[in-house]
Amino acid sequence: MEVRKIVVTKEIVSAEAGKTAPRPVTRVAGIAVITNPYAGRHVADLSPLFDTGAQIAERLMPEIVKLLGAKPVAYGKAAIVGVNGEIEHAAALLHPKMGKPIRAAIGGGEAIIPSASKVAAAGAAIDLPLGNKDNVWAFDEIDTITLSVADAPRPDEIVVAIALSDGGRPEPRVGKGRVL
Image 1 (cartoon, rainbow, N blue to C red):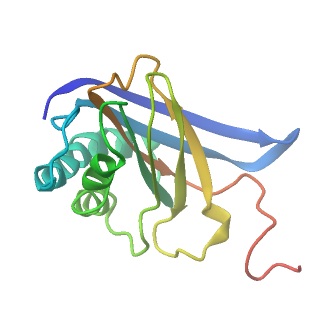
Image 2 (spheres, rainbow, N blue to C red; image 1 turned 180 degrees about the vertical axis):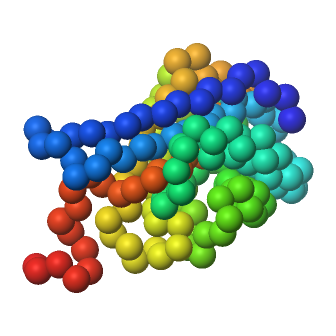
């Protein structure tokens, strides 16, 4: 795996729609910009990318867990493949093996890890989906964090991101158990 850069970001949401949140919600993300070994060529066997996905999670998770500074409640992952690659390159990184090191770093996680992927040019943004780590039906944590790297992905690169949150939307009013 050739890593060109790592970007780590943290946001603290203290208000929404002009109203102070009952408590600030912290979201952190780790982003790896890697060379796409399959850019410009169609390859049937993408299994080497399975291990690369796990390696990215192993590299990013310790730093973003530490940066969050609280117990993770929600998680998610995403990838942007440069224009010489294929959407399947993102799937090979995100799905087969990335989840195990994510869950190991946070001490569990029963729910699926929501994900998003696309093919795009440098500077493209992606809305990385977040979901409760233990309950896919916990609507309060269904959210997104928008990420981009100004100079990535280059045509032969992939931007891979993992995010954690210590809470859900600042003032959730939609979901199970609420009057509809």
